[in-house]
Length: 243
Ligand code: ADP
Image (cartoon, rainbow, N blue to C red; front, side, top):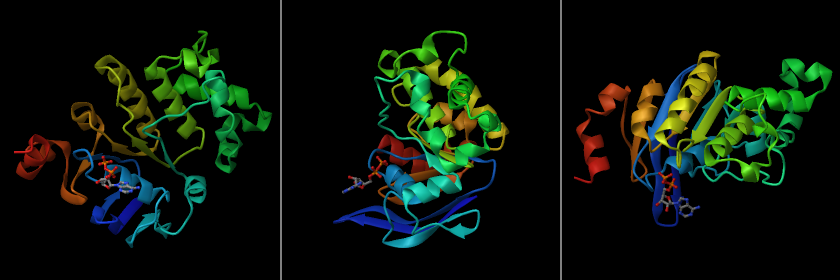
């Protein structure tokens, strides 16, 4: 579904991504982990077109998308969430989804024939765990707890009808209980066919979800494998313990 080939990106003297290759098959969950500054967000930005590589290529469903701008990549179905979420705080939560629901891909929502974006927005919020018959979907985003802000960010991405969803630190700032309630939501999305790439610091929870994990350190891929292989990998242990 997504294949990156020999991606390299330098910022001045820093090699943020050094010759990175990996792939994610349809319906898989790929985790990307690594210490701070190891190049995770750079890889997300390269896949989604926010920055361009110095060399290397990105393919989506076999098609070279390396030179495409972010909005075109999103319109093809490769959608991301952002680490620093910026909802419209003054708008009711569900109204935050109205603008993404004007995107071309959103037309494929079943309910769209009725032209009722509010209804689709409320459905999407329910899908990510907003209680439908509670006041929560109608509250301004500014009144929502952080856990719901993250869910809102997830719903905003889902409003673009992704085939591949790239989550940049979706679990950051959440309690264990909040993550535990998000996991089944992500599992269900994945079971329904969504391919997931998750950049995460919360390894324990990520490993419950991921089929495969790519480990970065200083812009290089130092390991790749199933979660149970990664936890046993000596290079990975060193990278994380600084040993
Ligand atoms: P991670 O997401 O793993 O924390 P990043 O991809 O954000 O790592 O950063 C990788 C390296 O590239 C870091 O050394 C960072 O300082 C550098 N870097 C990232 N983005 C930029 C940029 N826009 N300009 C200069 N340096 C950058």
